[in-house]
Image 1 (cartoon, rainbow, N blue to C red):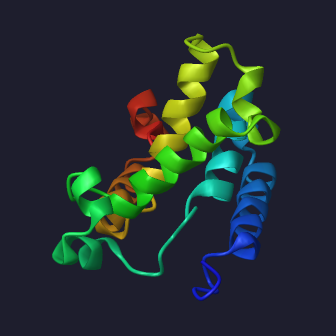
Image 2: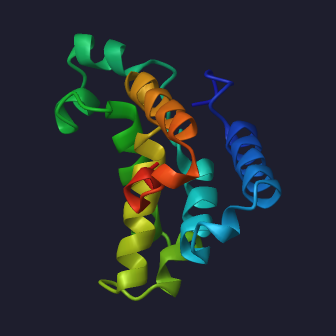
Length: 151
């Protein structure tokens, strides 16, 4: 969509670059597996793929095809996940998934982590994510639990 200038390739690369910087400078490799780091970077690239320049609320109120397809839940985010992963199957040149055997644990982890990262960009989930992060900060490291690492 060339009309909607913000959600373009530059935005995708910018998000991936910032993600790379946060991962690198923040020492994420101490907490994340390499496949999870790879997933975050890929999710940053595809998180707004085919974005129409609207928001989820607009799509739902308009009863758009996307809203129907994704049952009015994180419509644009689910569309980006679905399209990003399906493009791999449709175009061999874009198939970065082929490095991971279909049905393997790594492939499942990759696809699930990408989806989780992109779904976390839904503005409707922002307040809950911030609340969870602040709770973790206030609780300190002694409150650490692997379940807190969900994006």
